[in-house]
Image (tube, rainbow, N blue to C red; front, side, top):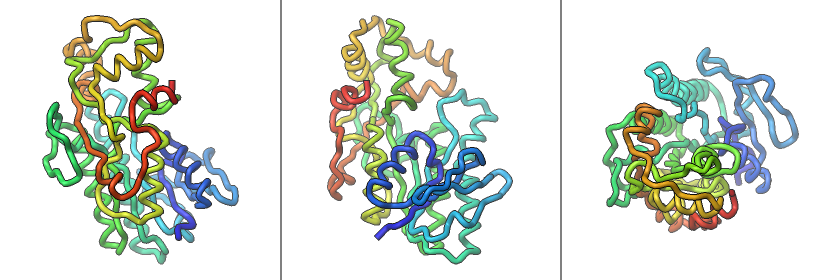
Length: 302
């Protein structure tokens, strides 16, 4: 029975929803934060300070904890300068390294380490459906991030823990994340498909991504899990659905790839490339999605 979990990144987009769902199940949450102002202390939600860059961490955070859910990492939607790329990788790997080294020298009750990861590890493809069994790795910066992230997670096995890696797709939420950015051009009346419009978007609703973490936690599942909704769509379909939900005209032609590359630099692959990713494994294990289809998800969020 899981009574208490430690979450890193608990105040972020996925973390905030996950905390809500844990509390609903009667699971207490400890969380680590780099901001002393964000430390709360209620009976089922307690904050502890850490600073991974300086190697500082409050070991009280681990007291009575059965599992760790690791969601921390700098946003990938800021321009990827060489300096910022290092921040993206370090924010993921250094923080896990600090937890790992701290636990090596600490008596604790933690049996399960669940880490965020990304579907960007899979190569860009318009035809192949990727499952957790696939071992090919894309040759992009994002794939490099995921490889480093997962390697840092696997180390926790040597501490006798079960390790789970949650390969997350495009998370759709009202206020934050990708959706407000996707919606912006439509609100200005200039929405259009991006690049060829043929690229796949393996999306997931915010309630389901948090739901999958909770499901993995409560059933103590280990291994790799694709956290994407059962019905990925191509960018042109997503664009059409958003346009019709917002009653906004669709512009033609598509926004050309070169224009997006000029605007976003290397980060343009976030919108120009995509993977068709299968959710079959987590469904087979018994997780049932609240939002199967993009139509329902957008209905809920827009």
